[in-house]
Amino acid sequence: MEELNRISVEQFKEAEKTPLVVVLDNVRSLNNIGSVFRTSDAFRVAKICLCGITACPPHRDIHKTALGAEDSVDWQYFDNTTDCVNALKEQGYRVYAVEQVDESIMLDTFHTQPNTPTAIVFGNEVEGVDEEVIPLCHGCIEIPQFGTKHSLNISIAAGILIWEMWKKLMSNPS
Image 1 (tube, helix red, strand yellow):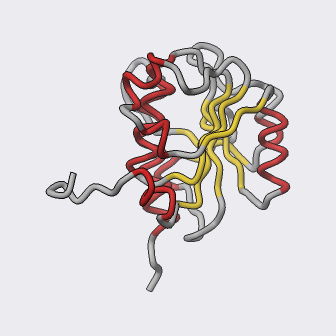
Image 2 (image 1 turned 30 degrees about the vertical axis):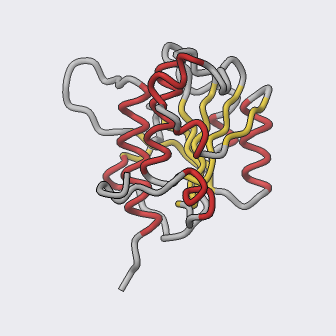
Image 3 (image 1 turned 120 degrees about the horizontal axis):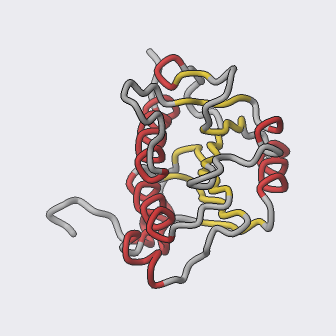
């Protein structure tokens, strides 16, 4: 740990966080949930909101991919995602669904100000972000794709979005 310059769970809890909340809207795969925890740990995401059927720690299969990140990253459970999104908006967050819709903003052209409290909502692996949630969001972000499938596994999409949001939110404009 020391040679890799890794901090302890206690140090992580005290460290400055990226002003980013990741919302999982009815994500069914425990491996995907664990992967999102692990990526969120890597970029010091402020919190993960687990909504609906999304499983919560402690769970053996979440731990298998999270590798302990479920202990470092704060998380909160909501029965439904609409309550979560409304609560985040009341706290001053800009909330964006990660979804392919008519007016989505391509990630490579998405702009935000550093240190802006932001939340990104990832949907169910089959159904996507719930249709009731999308109109509550400030917008939708889409990852540009150039192949035949036009979909990514949630853990891959989360990795891409969390990295890009970290760069945008934690940069120091000159």
